[in-house]
Every structure is written in C-alpha cells, then in structure tokens.
Image (cartoon, rainbow, N blue to C red):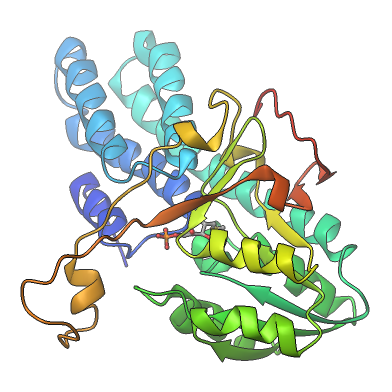
Length: 315
Ligand code: MRU
C-alpha cells in the first residue's frame, strides 16, 4: 500500500491492513509525519494544536499494542523539541524519526532472532500463534525471527502454525512467510494445538507480544493464553519474543492492559460468508493475557530473560 494521508494510515491500522505491534508503532510515527506534512503551511500555533490533535487520532486506532504509544511518545517529544525551529523542521524530524524507528526495529528483530535461536534444539518442532514475522514488524520478525535465524544457522525446524481465528493471521501470513523462507510448516486449526502437544513431541511454543507488563504478563493475540496453558500441562516451554518497544514497565500486571474488542462481523462473517445465525451474540476480544508464570523465557534484543520478570524501563 502507498499511503499519503494520515487518516488512511489510521484506517489501515484499524482494519488490520497494517498490523502486528511493531509495525503499528512504526506506522503510527509515519502517520504523524504525514499529518505534519499536511499542516505545514499553518501558523505555528495552529500547526502544533492540529498536529497534537492528529496524534490523538492516531493513538485512538488500536488500544493494546503498546508500541503505538511508545512511538507516539517519541514523536511528541520530538515535536516539542523541534517546535521552535518551525513547522518544516518538525515535519522533517518526524519523517526521520519514522525511518529511525523502522531501522531500529529491524535491528532489534535480528538481535531477538540471534538470542532466541539458542533456545531451539538442532532438530525441533515449534508451535507459533498469529503472525509475528516480517509482516508484523519493520522486517524479519520477532517469534518468526527466532525461527528464521535458527533455520539459516542450519537447524531443522518444523513449525506448526495455528490458523488464529477469527482473522487467520497464522493461516494467511505465517505460513506464507515460512514457506517463502523454505522453513517446514504445517497449518493447524487453533483447537488442534493441545492434541498436537499430547500426540507428538513439541519442543516449544514461541509467540510475539502486543504488550508486556512489568511483571512479565503478556498480551498477545487471542488464543495465546490457551496455547500457554496447554503448553504448561504438556511440559512444553512457552517463549515470548518481543522488542523493548513492546515492554510497558508503567503497567504493573496484565490486569491493567487494555484489551481491544473487535466487531462481531469478524467472527460471524469474517471472509464474506455468514457462518452463524443472524442476531447471535458474539464476544470477540482481539487479545488475551498470558500470566508470566506460564512463560519460560522472554526474548528481547537484549537477551533471554527468565522469571521472575521485573522490567523497569524500555529505554
Ligand atoms: O491483531 P494483530 O494481527 O495486530 O495481532 C498481532 C499479534 O498479536 C502479534 O502476535 C503481535 O503483535 C506481535 S507481532 C511481532
């Protein structure tokens, strides 16, 4: 997609054309740059007033992935610092910041991949949920970054990808990314993961994250919690891979993470075909919270963190 209007960027984030926590964070900062570009000819007072308004609109797109707020906080700081130099300087600064955050994210994913690959045996079977690959980040990916890294180091990784109802990020995106990279991948429905762990040797589960609280509780795509519970029961280590931009040290525990609820239509007619009776009630949280005590390790670009988790800042 080529996007030249911040409102179109907002819409793309809301309808998940751009999705995945790090990608949303990057897109949010570019959206701020697009807003500044549009407003650049206003007088400085109106410029700042309208730009801050645009930032609030961008922040209102999706509530759970903290990367969006992390990116916008950096954008706001830059706006305050550059304001005296004029509108054009603010616009250019935001554009550069977007590019910087994009480059940082790719570097963080590569480092996560390197650290995380150490956790994978030379021949292994891994389950992942949703999509935490290049399509969810600046490039390369977090959970999939770990797998890509292990694969290119010569390890033989077989991935089972949960399809990830209701929007099928696993079926649509994760399988595509893994097949393209030459990694062996088998698609399963979400409700098959527990049985898979019972019947076959699964070495670990790895997922991404949308927000990690100070105590390690982790919000990620709905279904992650169920996968972690099954993994605990079957003695399969459950790993989370995420950059520091996904840590939210200001949020004490998962209880304080805002969880987005999505439209019922995504459940009952997600891909254009009605699959439940008209008028049926639907509950559709987009994310759930996996308690820290189910997470064997959190992999960030700084290394492998083991419990008890106590994240203090995300600088
Ligand atoms: O609703 P989505 O598709 O934005 O949800 C994405 C996820 O839950 C990912 O696992 C998470 O953002 C990590 S992406 C590196």
